[in-house]
Length: 66
Image (cartoon, rainbow, N blue to C red; front, side):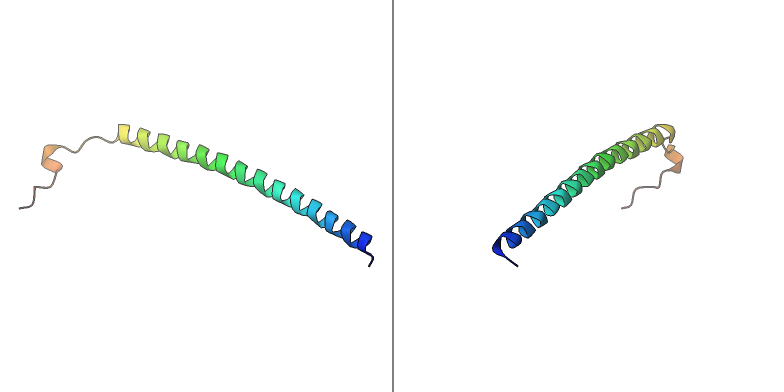
């Protein structure tokens, strides 16, 4: 393999590596956005659940421990 062929081969490999890195970066950014969306949805559900759950009545609360 001549030096020129080796250089072309290396350049081709670098191009594929750059493309792969860009695709991974895009996928990671998409996953991060989705995680943020799901985290917010869970936060909203917890808030709704907290609003619907009544506070325990005084007689339902356990006595303090001494």
